[in-house]
Amino acid sequence: PNPVGSLHHRHSSSRSTHALTLAMAKGPAKPVKPPPAKPEKNLYGKALDLVELVRPHCVLCFGLLATLRGKVAPYASDEELVKVLCGVIITFFGARYMATIAAFEAFRMVGWSTSKRCLLKLYDNYLKVNLFLIGLIMIYYIGGAWT
Image (cartoon, rainbow, N blue to C red; front, side):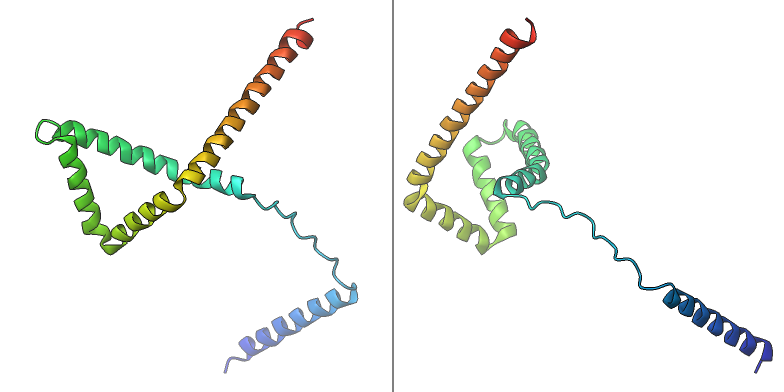
């Protein structure tokens, strides 16, 4: 055994004990404030995040499909391209693809008309509010800001 190493070990041990004793003598530690919590996003905010996440991929897919259609157009019609695309999807996604089609068809038969009516009403309300806000902005600029 190396006596210097053992002394060094004892010395560092007593040094850490001394630091702990000093820390305890200073009193209790001050409480640390947690960082302010971010407000939880509502459904609309989450949907916007999802759209922003998916949008670049959709743009890329549509660009690739347009390029593919341009290259294959002299050899095949659009109907044949749809069949080929469905075949490729079935090949890679298997039975889940068929279940997705069944789910969409079930929704179309049961809930599409109500959902469509509600979405169109929501869109009309959005247009009304947007038109109202544009009118307010115009009144502000024409009536208040330039006088």
